[in-house]
Length: 256
Ligand code: ZN
Ligand code: FE
Image 1 (cartoon, rainbow, N blue to C red):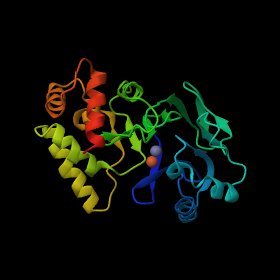
Image 2: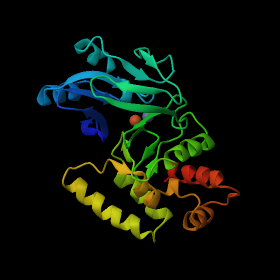
Image 3: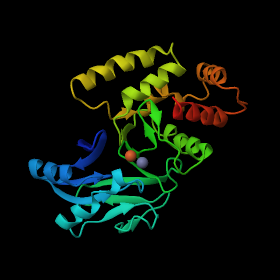
């Protein structure tokens, strides 16, 4: 059974993903409570749980206000004690059953963007927070390039048709960089045309899929000659492994 998932827009470019049925919903990374409360009211849904991927405030800022309206719901999230509102602290390999939705998700620890970052995977869907974006990946605020590389490898080991629900609409900006890395990637050019049209129509470019990302996302293509050649032209670095290609690519993007 696949999940029913709906994007709730927040701030400039965040999506708070709602996993729902006709009656109940669970939200992932509610950085802001107001759009979630409006959505629940409009759709006549009862919020039954909150899932958190990492400690950044654009992912956690709405928890307190939501708990005022829904005082007893569980808040799932990382071990990090800094996120005080979490009631169910999760670690790699844990499974959770979403209350009232009859869905199960498994937990992966994916350090890189932050050290506490976790993701939720189940029923063909991946809620990856700020680890993977369409055509890009999260900045390394706390982790090392190697940690991020290994975290992304966990995603590419998932079935290719897995839907990828990222937290930010960064796709068009990421494509600009991806094209600088792989100007001749035809799949990327076609993807850009599609993504531009989506945004013109005020539609999300998400969810993506693992398969799509493997075709267009340079951060998942560090084993491709096109990416390796481009990175080595950009920067005199010793590219001895996929990880070092990834590290140089991430550094390039940080200064792009
Ligand atoms: Zn973040
Ligand atoms: Fe974020």
